[in-house]
Image 1: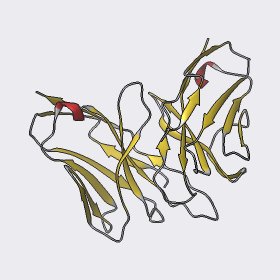
Image 2: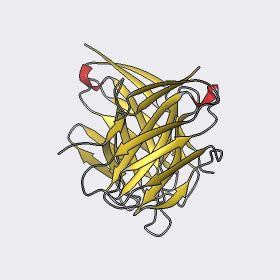
Image 3: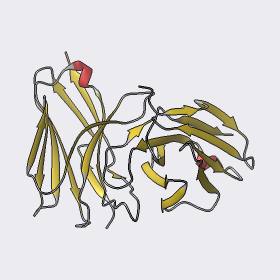
Image 4: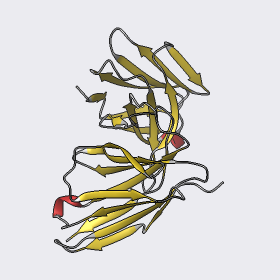
Length: 113
Length: 115
């Protein structure tokens, strides 16, 4: 079956711009989480959506937001981009929320210049 | 209290050897401990996971050992192969269906298996 699909794979943006990243979870998966991966901070949790509701949120500024649609697809938005937002953004999906194994996508590599 | 500490940062072993990666946590509310493997250009892939009601779980060449009293858990890779060369992350979670889930990751271990 198809895995978690993230688009685009690579993105270059300028400081101050905004960006929207997309994630299509595995069919039947209703929980979608987003993580930021950087060499300095490692893997950090951004937020989780389940049944179109944000269930959990990490310690990121309000410039980072997300949403989930009725088909479980999710988008993540970052406004007023800063150089420090350059990272690999990973989406993960699971059938349920709670303590279950999450399947990650290959990520979107965002570079802010 | 949400941190998960992982060691070593990097590890080099010979083919056929045993690779051991250790993690420690503080939050006693954590009740799910997965390990992920990540290759360059890919997202992390779930390798094996354990819950605190068991002390050991084995799947093929991969074994998790869990010490609840010490708040430590470790990954053992038996008969390590060059194809195991990757970055390994331990993680912990205390997710609930009502409050959602988040994984807290360790810093990662870069494993290199020499032929």
